[in-house]
Image (cartoon, rainbow, N blue to C red; front, side, top):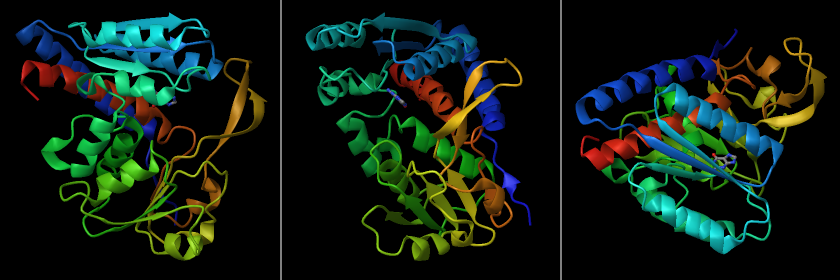
Length: 302
Ligand code: GUN
């Protein structure tokens, strides 16, 4: 059996088209567009490329987009003052501080300084708490877990009563997606197990999963024989395992590998995300969705 491919690149286009249409409607009716600022401190090449893509996507959708680049030695107090400025700016509905930050800056302090009502990353403790409560309380689900849930739903996979096994317990993926999948409601209502480096029988748990979400950051951690035949496999791992020359551009690019051995796993799973082109493209897409949502909350139409 060959699994159905859940392609993030295709789902991204569907969602971005939906957002674009909604932005146009809101602009006509309310004269407002979503505003997103991305704050980049320093010149980390991966961060520059992520932020550039975020801004490009926001521009395509008709958002008011601001890219605020700051030097690597920006004092923490100045960064906090900058966040305060955008917290008070009525044309900005989403504030994203690109991580990681330089070592002299306290990341927790910075994330906590963002107005929770503009925290489109969903990293502020208030939004983490809202996510835990679930239902109408949730304002901004964190982008990668929200993308994962959207992929599962759009792939037509039944979540109600499903055994969901999450591999990894990070604050950005593992913990929030586990929380989201156990909530009572559509696209969730699952029985959730979280496994991690302290788990005794990783293989045994994975083998029970109807939906296996792997976010461990260890290339090839999940072996094909751990996958239940017909299961839905979501591979969040993006591991750089080498470099190659791109056939398209002639430039050096990273060779990426997921946490699951894709070639063998696709012969066992019912549906599976590829790496690259799976979960990756969904994160920026959900950031755009959260920014639009923030404007809708402000206009009272969410
Ligand atoms: N760095 C890598 N991924 C992310 C993300 O989703 N949000 C922020 N703010 N920084 C990141």
